[in-house]
Amino acid sequence: MSTPIDDIDRVLLEHLARDGRMTNNALAAAAGIAPSTCLGRVRGLVERGVIRGFHADIDPAALGRDLQAMVAVRLHAEARRHLAEFGAQMRGLAEVENVYFIAGADDYLIHVATADSSGLRDFVLDNLSAHPAVARTETILIFEHVR
Amino acid sequence: MSTPIDDIDRVLLEHLARDGRMTNNALAAAAGIAPSTCLGRVRGLVERGVIRGFHADIDPAALGRDLQAMVAVRLHAEARRHLAEFGAQMRGLAEVENVYFIAGADDYLIHVATADSSGLRDFVLDNLSAHPAVARTETILIFEHVR
DNA sequence: TTTGAAACTGTTTAGAG
DNA sequence: CTCTAAACAGTTTCAAA
Image 1 (cartoon, helix red, strand yellow):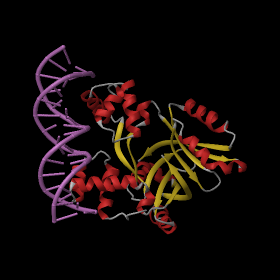
Image 2 (cartoon, rainbow over the protein chains, first blue to last red; image 1 turned 90 degrees about the horizontal axis):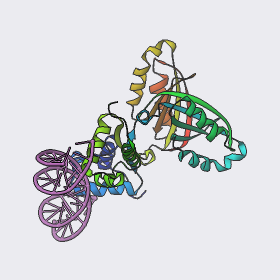
Image 3 (cartoon, chains in turn cyan, red, brown, orange; image 1 turned 90 degrees about the vertical axis):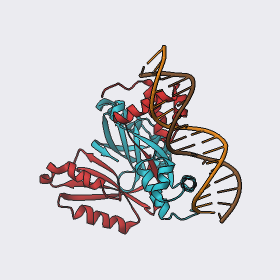
Image 4 (tube, each protein chain N blue to C red; image 1 turned 45 degrees about the horizontal axis):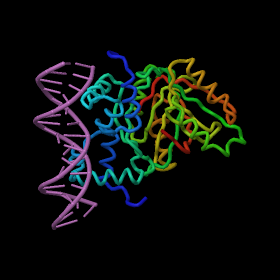
C-alpha cells in the first residue's frame, strides 16, 4: 500500500460509499478541497484498490428474483485443494449474489437470488449437489437482506 | 410496479450493475437509445425502486478492517415481535456490512468487518451478547468475500 | 415515449505555487 | 500535493413528433 489513507480520503470514501454517483464538485466541496485535487485522490483510491468499483444496487425482486437463500456448502476433503476455483465458479453464476469463503464445518456460504422455490431447487441441485467437489449443502431461506 | 421492465431496461441495469459510473452517453449507446431517453429511463428505474442506489465498493482491509465474520444470531422468543427493529439497529453499526434476516434455528446472519480479533470480540460482546433481545450468537470467520 | 439540439453543469487538463 | 482557470465532455431540458 503506497500512500496511507488520510482523513480527507476517509471523507471521500464515506461519501462515495453512500452515494457512488455524487459529482466530483460536490465531493470536493464536502471534503473541503479543489475539484481537481478531489479527482486525483479518487483516481488514486481506485488505482490502489481501496475503491474496488462503483455499482448500481438493483432490487432482485424487480428482476423477478423474489426468493433469496444462503446455501452453506461443504466440499470433499480432497477437493479442498481447489477451494479458490470453486469460489470463482460460483461467483460466475447469474443467481449468485455473494460468496463467503468461511472457517468451520462448512467451506462456503453462497447467497443466491432466484425467481421462486423451484428455481432455488434447480440451482442447488444443478450447480451444487451435482458438483463433484461438493460433499453437502444446507439451504437457509432469507426473508430480507439489507445493505 | 407501474411500468414493467423491458429488454432495454434490462440492458441498462446490467451495465449499471457492472459499472455504476458509466456515463449516460455510453449507456445510451450500449442500449441503442438516445441519451435523453436513457436518462429518463434510468431516472424511472431509480424512482420505481428497481435501482436502490449507487455505491462505491470499498475494500474493508484498506480501511484497517482486516477481519470479517458472519455472526448467526438467535433472538429470544419474546423479542421476535421486534425483529425488524433489531435488524435496523444492526444495519446502523459501522462494523456491519450486511444483514440477512433468515428462516431456521437462527434469526439473523450479520456480516461484520472489524480491525482484528479483539475488535470482533468487542463487537459481538457489546452489540450482540449484551443486547436484551439476543438469546445466542455463533461467530464464523470469513476468509474471503466476493461480490 | 421518443428524439435532436441547445443550454448548462460538471470534468479534466495544464500550468504554477 | 495543492490550486486556479480554461478547455472539454457529458448531462439535462425542451419543443416537436
